[in-house]
Length: 229
Image (tube, rainbow, N blue to C red):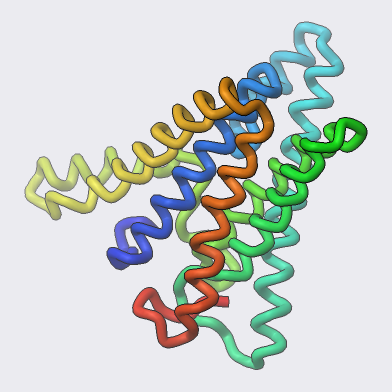
């Protein structure tokens, strides 16, 4: 959970969350009100579309949900296979493999966006990328920090804020607030970038993901933010 992250891990989580917000902000406008990282929103949208007879909208929303899950599966399998090859169980910490999988998928989306005949694959690739990045912080195969969805983060913030009011730790709630702010600010930046650059703004997101992918890989298993896969 975000409350247990080190300062460097928290900075990484904030960076990845802001990147997810950036991608979701630009994709939300491009897709006319559908999400590539917030699947609760797409699930609600799918239900509303079906109820109002918009079958195309239902297919779009459910397709994004499907590819998001595909990205989660791909990331999880990649992390598992790398751990199996190394012959060890990685300790808790950021997994570079998950970030690289997300980066490759997002790069694929950016490339497809520049080729008119391939643009139909852009949204599925972005959704898969956002699913994959959620595998960055895991323990025992379970996600410990959700990077692209903030409902649980806001609940945790509220709980820790209540603890602070009743005499508990007075600062942990701020870590959850920072994550929420990261995705909110990222979404604003992504929406603005899309209005200026269109889908070309995806290349900015690719660069934003490339930085942590490279840094995580270079720091190695003795990094201060612990070993990664």
